[in-house]
Length: 267
Length: 282
Image (cartoon, rainbow over all chains, first blue to last red; front, side, top):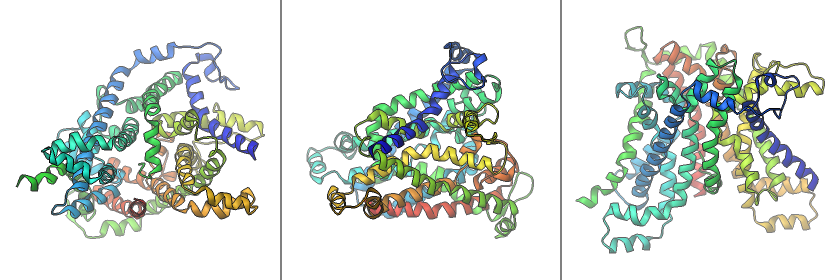
């Protein structure tokens, strides 16, 4: 039984990881080994020039910066706005509360694939087409995230809030200084899920962005395939570059990602 | 007075963005679906005409059946993730690196996933056909021939999801009290019997959750298709791909919106079920 388990485990890891090994190896190959048959897994000579070549051939630095801006602003905005909304829904009783809840649930059920055309016309009318703001704003609040934060605020004992109120804290200070720090684990979970979604998002930036200097890494990469069809090594290098940030962030936040999965709230 | 408006102030940014970027577009989709509305002609109210046309459109039925066919990834994903979860649940807890390797396909941007699999599926130079040649198989046209290329997209989807669902099942397994399992062992149940009679019944909520999430993303499938086999003709297209063609290529907004409403109705069944399950759990 033990042996069987080990074999299955090894198969799973191999299936998950080998395509990445292949990508990495392609990004480090010389031209002659690229289409060698049988395929070569470990290049005989490591060609780092594929990376510098790619960096010089297309504005990779600009793609990278754009992706970074989009991702950081999306994560910050989502966590902040969802926290504010979740706090109100969990800690206050007010008129039309149910209506707001229903609205948020309805929003959760709308797939973005379905509204992408009217969304694009709205972005056009706002003059945000072909801009990073147009990429960021429509998805800066996540209905599911509001629910996650509401859940986190609901679980804080009433005494803590009361202590804050006794100290004379204003509602905003109460949220910022007393309550929000207590929801840090859930904020981290929401942040890592948003980071992965935003860094990897492709369809929406593809629809919004037209000029190359505004491209995110994913859009740039997809055009790279068109222009450098004959240079697979550049494309592979681009792929590796776009994986690295998300892996680094993930390694540090893995705990919170798993926690999100385990509570069944992963997006 | 101040106290009364406080919660509304806290809610304002979220409600503003959700209203402007989710509710308004969705209302537009609904209302435009009753219009003849395109770049090329006058707009007029035509009632359910777009829907009637849709139900007589062979492309609609074709893409709908393709989308439903893609839902077949769900049972496969459930079985594969379950097998992996059961095999590694004792060993994986401690090894962070091991878990990272299972998550790698999950966190990788879909464009990169598309690039990798396109090369591996390549007919002449791809590693998959190379490996298959060892067991004497002819080269398979993974990307160019229907319905094989649908299978390729399904394989990509399964590869991208199995680590994720496996982890969810591991979480479900961790919730099963140890005593229940030990009782089974004492009763002399074989490992297989244990899985069937003890673990599976206890995993029902987890498996239901996976069924709902995986099926609804299969209905919405488009990006994976787009990155793996862009520009292929209609024959393997999904509902969402057809929606894109109607909206961004034919600019037939009224007709496209009717299709969008149908897609929304199908997926909302799944997301409603998902929401109810989330509520029950918390």
